[in-house]
Image 1 (cartoon, chains in turn green, cyan, purple, brown):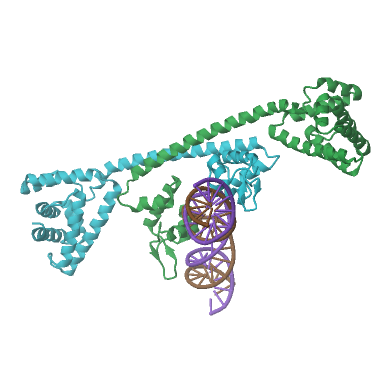
Image 2 (cartoon, protein in one colour):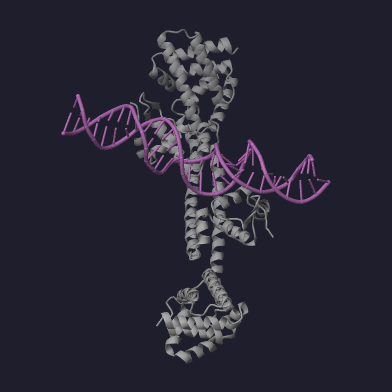
Length: 257
Length: 257
DNA sequence: TATCAGGGCTCACGGGGCGTGAGGGTCAAG
DNA sequence: CTTGACCCTCACGCCCCGTGAGCCCTGATA
């Protein structure tokens, strides 16, 4: 007699009870009758209206629009639907544009990965310093060669963002070293050792594995030998290249062997 | 020195001042510095970050996601973009489905316009009662023919929903007439006259113009003559067809001439 | 008949991304 | 010193409910 309760309607139509309450509150879907106990009872007509509501909601209409559409006798459904169709078309075009933008961005990012190689020349290009690599290898042998290869392999997958992050950390370490040098701290002081720990971790990250003592020392030596590294460090602070190299050597001997 | 104010940034980037306040509130974009007066000042770096934010916002990321993307050093932009691309694809597919649904609905609605003709056979089909029309025309002449044509033209544009609304009103009137008949009210009583006013208005709506006395009376007579109408009315209440016809005739004579 | 599960009800807050005042300080130009 | 254009901080509103909290109803069972 008195129709379906909220829960039953909820199950039938796959909406939440709260939603039915809400639709009642805003006058979008009122129950056919309300019992003396306050219970809402819905009839066949309300179920049909709910179907209409859900259909329009699917189409992206606001609840207020839906209310107007369903209530206004003279409302032109056809025009409303056509207008909505146009909205959807516009959205689709917009999405296509966004996808194109994303594709371009992805292409750029992948381009960056290669660009990073060139950007790395800002002081960290391992690719283009075959000569100095050779020196290192000559001094330290095949093991060193392997370390260098590993480093190159690890960095090949980098993107600009990775590189930037690395640079930031490297800058911080270098700044600390410069200060230590200016402050006259010995290369095996506690402060410098802490920096070396970061340096070692940083190289470990860029190589994708911790650098063994020999490689760490070798890299330090390279900072002195390679004019590009030398320029980088000494340009920041006179004597910095030598200082760092000494600190790395000391650290390697004390903590990596 | 102290950079751009909110308004300047707003103009430069085409966002609202409130938006900048909001981004500051949620920590998404903090000004480079804040003056002693509380003014926000943005620098070049903040402008660049804002561009990034707007770009990602365009792509539909939530502000929280954008914050994470921009802040997390190790965040994988490529993966995020690809994931988002997939979301867009899914949305596009969904929209296509919705458009198909709309098209089907539109087709159905247009079909309904024709269906209404058939549905009208439920008692109001003027198309299929040429014989009774002829009778009416014979009795009342060319003017009646014109009324009938007008009615058919008016109803041709109807859709199911219009028709249902009409039916509801007609039902209400018929119920009132049935009650008046049972109660023994005369066909020219005040209550019946009120119902006749509604009846006249209703016919006016369905014809798209008020029915003149002769047409109104003629229609009433048709309720008696046409077995389909007769069945409809007498099925509801014995003698109803005659009663309505009498009421319509009386009303037409008293109020329409 | 008392109990208990499984309903039902009414508040009322939250959340996302700001729009939009209200109410009041600040700055540069005239 | 005034004006007018900016700046600030609350704080509510919108849209569509989700998610409790706290309390009442109902029908079946022990």
